[in-house]
Image 1 (cartoon, helix red, strand yellow):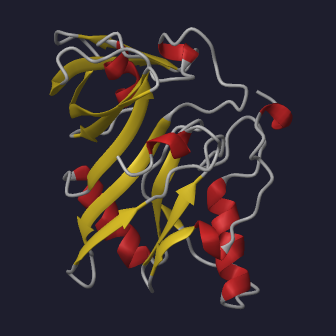
Image 2: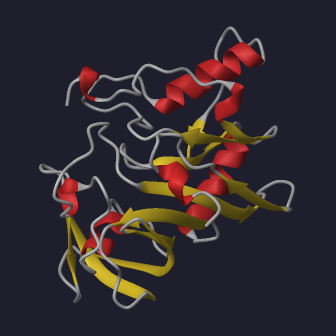
Amino acid sequence: MGKTAFNNASYDITDRDVLYEDNHLIAINKKGGEIVQVDETGDEPLDEKVKRYLSIKYNKPNGAFLGVVHRLDRPVSGVILFAKTSKALDRVNQMFKSRQMKKTYWAVVRNRPVPESGNLVHWLVKNPQKNVTTAYNHEISNGLRSELNYQLIGQLEGYYLIEVDPITGRPHQIRVQLSTLNCPIVGDNKYGYPRGSLKKTICLHAKRLRFVHPVKKEEVVIEAPLPRDGFWEKFEGM
C-alpha cells in the first residue's frame, strides 16, 4: 500500500489525542488508518509523531524517549499505550506478557452473533506473506492458542455492537475469531465482510485499557472516545 492509501497518514498529535499522561506513560487515541511503527509503506508512524509531540511539549531538542509496548492493526482505532521511560517500558512489557493488562474492544458487525455471548478458543496461524491469519478450532503445529470473551451489547439499524475482552493478544485475533461466528467486522473484507471501507478502516475500536500502574501501583482505567466519522457516533451511550 502506498502513502496515499490512508486519509489519516499526515496528521500530527495534539493535546486532544492524548487520553492519559504522567511521568512514565502516555496513552493516545489512535485514529483508524494510522500505523504504530514504521512499515514498508514509508508512512510516518504514530510512535514518531508522539516523540515529536513530547519533544515540542517539553522542549527536548535532542528528542524524547518513547517505548512501544503493544500495537493496534492499522485499520483499528482506540487506546494505545506508550512508555516514556525505560523503567516503565520494561515493567509494562512484562505486564502485557503476564496478561495483567485488561483490554476491551468494541466491534460492529452486520450479523447477530449466535450465541449472543461466549468464549472463543482457536489456534491461529499467520501467513506473513499475505498478512492474513487463519483460525483452527483444534491444536495445530505452529498455531498460537488464542482466547477471547464476547457479548452482544447493542443493536441499531441492522448493525450489532459486540464488546470483546481478549485474553490473549495475537495478530488479527479479534478480527479472525469473530469471523468464525459468521460475524466479520464491518469494513473488514480481509476476514469476510463483503466490501472494504473507503477510508481503509474497520469498525473495531480499542475502547478501554485497565491496569495497575507499574510505578504508582494505582489502578488506571483509560477509555477512548469513539471515532467522529459519521458512523460510530450512532453507538454512543450504549
